Length: 344
Image (spheres, rainbow, N blue to C red):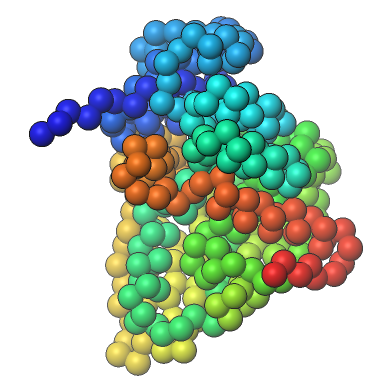
């Protein structure tokens, strides 16, 4: 059997999520981080020591010119994603970019087009859809036991203060729709198809932040499903808060399916209700407060690796994620105008 060499990649960025991203790559196996780049060298040095990364840079152009790479994983701030992605594309290095892909739809479109013209594979690290319980629910819907879905509800509402670990979120002009909406609208696309139209209302409950921390989006998809996506970091006391679990309820013409607290999937048809729990894998490196989300990094990067190796089409390409971002920015337009936005 031919030995498959580990993919050589570089990490760009050494902030909060870089540690978990590197741990996810290591857990998935089949790759090695050979270089890390960050504007503040001390942060890169700390991760290099922890993950045995041999080369450290503060300039991405220098890194791309000196290293032989199969991919570059960009975990820098969203406002510099476009710059970093297009620089990698010019060097003909396949690109993986953290979400949100960009801070504007125009920038995201330039990134996708730039990689396409350069002939460079482009992937977005959209891990939410890879959560164990969400994949279990998708299999349930695909099996058809509840028939054709006609309505779905996706909810991620939490009192947990995300600003403790990521204080920069307080200063983002567009907050929850770009931070959490990217994830949830992507899950809606995965489960129910593409949105034909969209309506959104948003609000800011915290008075010490710039952006919106509450949003509700309603779409009608090309599969005839009405979908309501609710998200909030309002910080108000809740009877039950299992951050960052996502709850999903689906009605079909033959039954219903529900992903509820503690990773339970319940399917109800004329034959009764059947329940099964789908907890995420346990890894020593995950933060217990983020466990279900961080564990999903592993199957996400494994899928991207298959795409990099040409072993199959990865799900979360830049082109695919552009469809999610079109919904995100349409949601901002709808919230500002008070009107529905036609997407198809």
